[in-house]
Length: 431
Image (cartoon, helix red, strand yellow):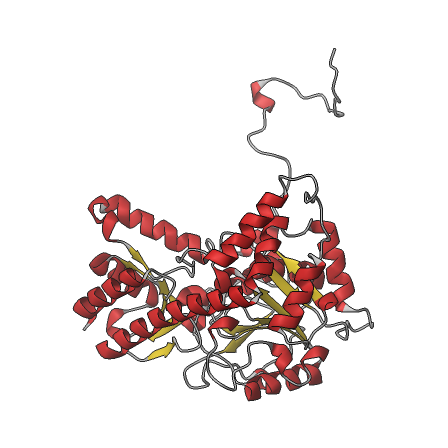
C-alpha cells in the first residue's frame, strides 16, 4: 500500500538482458550540430588543464579573459539590494510573485532615466539578463527565420540559432553554419557590417559597443543599418550591454536615439556591466509598440506571452537594487565603476600598441582587440603561448567566429594591480 500518487507504469522485465543503459528518448538533433563546447567554459577548461600540469603557477594566474566584473557593488546600490532583502522579512513590506514584465516603478525609471522618454515604460520588459533574453527572443522567432550575425560576434547569437533549429550544419572549411548570414566585420570596414551587400535575413543581430572588437557604431552607421532593415523587412536586435562605456560624442548608447529605430528594432540590455550585477542578474528588453510581424501582430504581444509563460519575473530583491542604480547617487557610482574599467582598457591598449601590435577598441568599450602577427600562429596558439609564458588568460578571436581568427581579445574587467602586472609580463614576453 502507498499513500502517494503512483504514476502509470508499463511492466518492465527485471532480467539483466533487457535492462536499459540509456533512456528511450531521442536527442534533439540540433544540439548535435553545435561545434564543441560554449566558448567561455572551454577557456576555463584549458586554464584548469594548464594548472593541473603546472600547479605551482596557481598564484600567478591573471584573467583578462571572460568579461566578468571584479569590483564590488558600490555602497548606495548595495544598499538598494539590502533594503530589498529586508522588505521580505516584514509582514507589511513582504512581496511574493510580481508582474512578469517587471516592477512598474523600475520600468518607468528605465524609460525615463536611461532612454530620456524615447520609449514608454510599457515597452520595457525587466528580466534576468540580456543573454537569457536573446534565447527568449529566439523562442519567439521560432525555427523558420534566417539570422544575420556580425563576424566575429558574441557566440550566443549563433549558438541559440543552432539550438532552435534555424540552421544547417557547420561547414568544416569555413566554420560557418548553413542558413546564417555572416556579416564580415574587419579593420577595413571599421568592424561595422555592410548588410546591404549581403543576402537578406529576417533577424539581424548587432552589438555596439561590440563584443569582441570593441568598436562603437556611429549614429550615421546605425541609421544606415536601420534604413536597410526597414527596406528589407528585417528585425534588428540591438545588443547594448556595453552602452555605459560610451564616452565619445556622436556615438549612440541606444538604437532608439536613431531615426526610424522604433519601426525595426528591439534592444536588449543589462545591469551586469553597469553596476557589477554579473552575479546578481538583472536586465531588460525594449520592444516598441509599433514593431509588428508580417501579419500585423505586435512583436511585443508575442514576447509578452513568452515572458508570462516561461518566466516568473526578476527577483524582487534585485529589482530593488535596480531602482537604486538609477537614482542620482546610483548613476554616479556607475560612472565611477565605468571610469575604473576604462582606465584599465587604456593601460592594456597602450601596452599592446607599445609592443608594436595593431590594436582596436578600448575607447568606448572594455575590450581590446589585438591583431596578431603571423609568427604567433592562430589565435588559439597565441592563447596557449601567452598562458604558458605569462600566466595571463586571454580569449582567442576564433572563439567568436571565423572572422575573429588572427586576433586576441583582452578584457579590462580585472583589478587594477592585476592589469598592471599583466601589462608588465606581456611587455617582457612579447616585445
